[in-house]
Length: 330
Image 1 (spheres, rainbow, N blue to C red):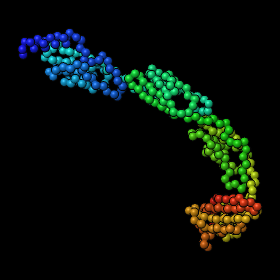
Image 2 (image 1 turned 135 degrees about the vertical axis):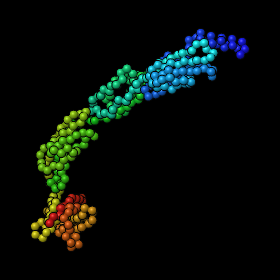
Image 3 (image 1 turned 90 degrees about the vertical axis):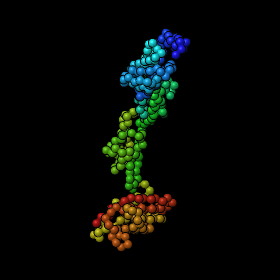
């Protein structure tokens, strides 16, 4: 090499060594689970050697290094043209990413709910525009919050449902027709509400068997217990018809026929019997018609059959339809 070129290289080396190496930043921050690329900020000739000392060990011959483990990273650069090694370091800080913590919830009536963040030291931005760690909610809907610790961030949301608190579940009194086959009390409640009737039923409805007072108690998480009662009475409705629920066609002259009992006069009467699969078994248009438990002359098997009775009472143009089940026994 010529002396002039050697003088230039030595001069360049003196300039580099006269300055503090600035190969890496002093500190880096990243979120847990992410990675960052360490890259020497200066370029060196192809004859340079690069050595990394990391928490995981020593890595050589690369100016770029993808890292994600916290700790100190040291880089050394050697060259035949340097009288001294270049050395710099960076400390990698790994921050915990905020986790989602909100859960869908309900509030009762006009009450409110305090929603508090699990990350008091972080930056917050709520869908309401508030930047506090705690907000008060009194209306239903979807709410979200964005949380950031300066490096890591997460957006979380919740749905708030409002349950209307009602002290009145039942009317004060209710009447049922004497000839009604299904006398039921029922209430409409919010999803998740538990019910208990004075009859012991825990369903949304209960059967009524006698006159008197009945109560129901509803229990929901936000609204607590609510109890209401109703007085039940029976009354005659239009023309009464009594329909048996079983008969025994065994030719012993007792309960051998199925037929409704009524003292009313009809301008139209139709009674049909079908089996559980919907097949027609018997039909009559006579109000005094009776089914003997046979089909085409053959005695039907023991089973539950379905009846349908359609009537129009004399002096009225309103058709009444009664349906139910009758059991055939021998």
